[in-house]
Image 1 (cartoon, rainbow, N blue to C red):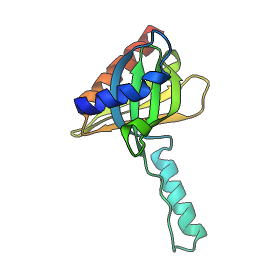
Image 2: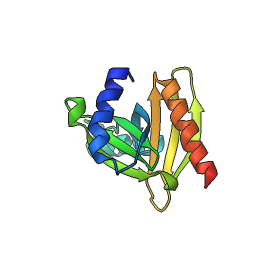
Image 3: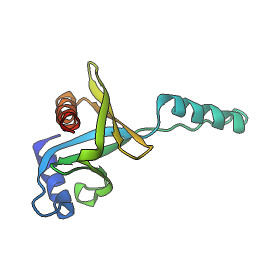
Image 4: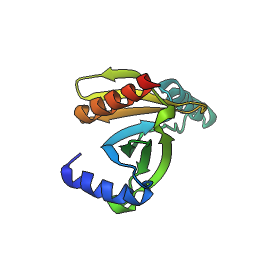
Length: 145
């Protein structure tokens, strides 16, 4: 992210932070909770049910990620940065990182939260440095448990 965008995102999320909580990393990534198999299944099912006239797809959504020393905040972008809303707050000690893959243009990984059935699939596209930093920090947190 550009420095100006990072400043605005930090200002937006600051009211959500607890006393003494500090921001460690900021980024923008493509986030989804469905696997590739599930995405194909949705497309095939809607095509069959509609008699081949339509096919629905599940598209990953671009989200802002804010990693603090206590948790990972996921924000849905608004029309402006200031209108972005927190849609998930994941306690850092409960996050497990897996499936880190680096390609020529992206870094992707999976985040699971202990006790929750949902797996977040995160892809930093054209922001490999940000993706690597998130993966390293979240991987270290998981190793400390």
